[in-house]
Length: 171
Image 1: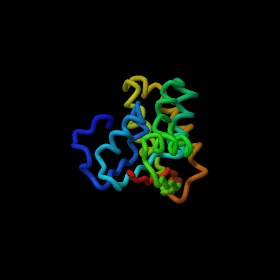
Image 2: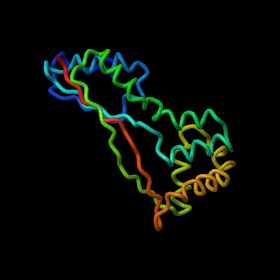
Image 3: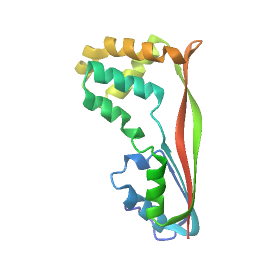
């Protein structure tokens, strides 16, 4: 994102959905997005404002039963959620008419043990070996399921997620 393969002024709109938080040099990425926009062009981006409840439950379970490094990595997508920090970066990249809002969405996840097990395995496999996952699996499943019971509605866990929606223009 810091060196987009497009000529200057190529686009009227750039949509950056849930990816800027993964870029090490966010200002460079925003500056390059600005470069590829036409005069008056518009940036629309979203980044998570708070951790999803199921990610937070999983991170806490990993902190208790595996290690804190994995827990920190699981929460990394949510580490750039401060509205004023985001506004400052967008402003520093010379965007104008910056508008920000918090948007909410609902996440539904089956509350079955198989679903919780699949979620844990899918998330954990990014950071742990199959052996490490299996060693901690039962403890992780119990803790995550217990934590999410508050959000149980019928056969699902129903949770609200929040993200920052940012819109800005090139002068």
